[in-house]
Image (cartoon, rainbow, N blue to C red; front, side, top):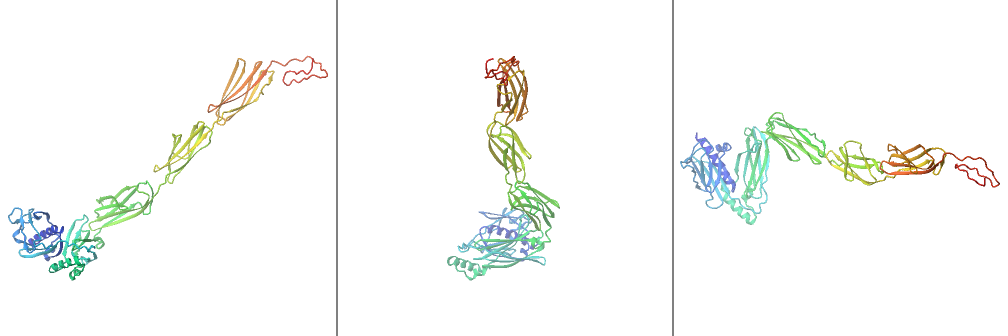
Length: 560
């Protein structure tokens, strides 16, 4: 290994280790790095741990390093560097240990690194100074441009105390950060006087000249475009003397669009599309280019994230959303940048169905129950209940079912369901009535006498529900005959029947039965004789005879 290579490896490893160990509790006020070392600062990284014994650093290279060629000056005194096996050679994977301490107790630690007697690195760290009037974080203003193969960062910052350090790091899409520049801003020869001014400021609130000088930052950093080929962003940190840190990110695809080779397009749903509450919404997107990954978000919440393994690459997922406006966002990225697409959709509130139930009559018997159901999307079924007992389900219009009601009060309910299984119901109470049938015998009239055996019976039978049958009975002493006529639930029946009766007194009865089991009846009594008496002659005195035979029996008005 040549001398230059040796100095680079040693310097980079130790500088990185010092930065890791000190940044947790100290503020870097200034630093200077030799030009040849600065160019290699991002090529190596050291495994560093801090223990009560000091700072432990592992050699990550395959190169043995002679510790006698390295000298570290801490707070104006040499710091001991010990290797693990004590042979003076920092071997590959071996650790060395060193201590960095505030030897004089003033809170300021200058550190100098020399390789082969040549100073390659100098920095000053200080304990954070508590300033009760320091309320603001340092501001950052970045003026970014890309020209002549370089990314130029013009960094500006202001703070209400002192801007002490800024750091520039390069990040890739996996958020792995590579340091590019770390710079302490305070001139070493101003440090002591500046510390005194800060102490006075803490007590009096008055700023001195050095505080005003270092309360502002203006610097320029240039990064070759070739270094950025596999990077996604640059991040700039600015720290004030109390430890407050601000940062800003520069996205490289904005300045090097030619590096980005990725696009993403949401295929469905379409922008402005409307859906119903409860709908399953399918989101589809396509990624083209040399993309590494894709993510889909709904209203800022991630619903899908995948590595991209093909070109083009299709992704899909499904969501159910609450009513309202929603934004679907898709983003894809490659090593140089990212692309995105978004659509806005609307989910409409699905109101529950409405329903009205009715019955065709309040007469007991078989009745039609109708449900008038409506919904903004559609009815899937209507369930019918009588007195809290389910009697039927109807899946299509018209929603009509039939039920046989007994007389009395009954509760009828219909429950309609929509496509979301939301329900609406209606209930009514109906007092059903059932009157018995009526019977009117038209012939024969009650009490009539017949001289022949044939008697014609005529009657009108009526019912408000329906007639089941009509029975005719004729009775004389112990003689009893009957004839029952079955009916088909008609409400009116005109009876006509001829009876052959023997001589005597007969009771004729017509009995009607309705479909509910109610009965109604009417009856008459008639006389049947074999023949009327023969009249041989009659003397009619002045008072006269009556020859009125209208009832079949002569009425004598005088003496024969």
